[in-house]
Length: 178
Image (cartoon, rainbow, N blue to C red; front, side, top):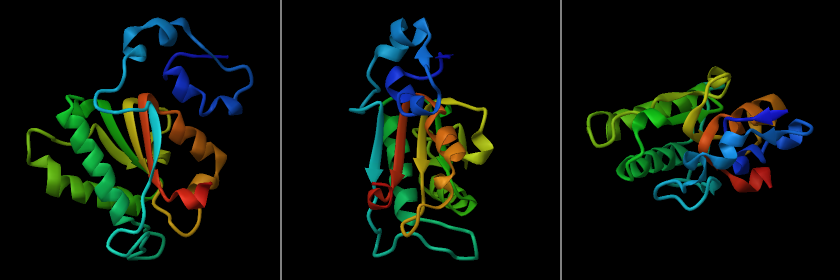
């Protein structure tokens, strides 16, 4: 009934799923859980991504969903976090679709991988593949702009919001989820 992984503010996002979920003392007293995230205002945030260059989600092949706007935004936040001094190994990028995972990896290769200031994040993978893992900072791309998609499965939702220790930043189309 007690969690010791995430800041209490982040754990509150999924506490509705676990009756009587409380916090271990370490997340209430350890300075790394109490300090603000460098360069960021919030411990968690939903970033509304509008159409990018006139397009939201795309599907280059069946069931291979991509969203270039979210990929660009998420990589830009990764780069900003690196410039704020957050180690690349402490940042993971998740997506709900393999197509988006591939697109984000391509954008990272073009913009970051060759530059020692940025490098590559610890992981760029799908929510399903990240189950059982965690990282200090998790950036999530929800991809879809027409329907909720995979995240409608409550198990995926819980995995998505419960992987971050200090910061969770979710990119998506707010109007679909409100």
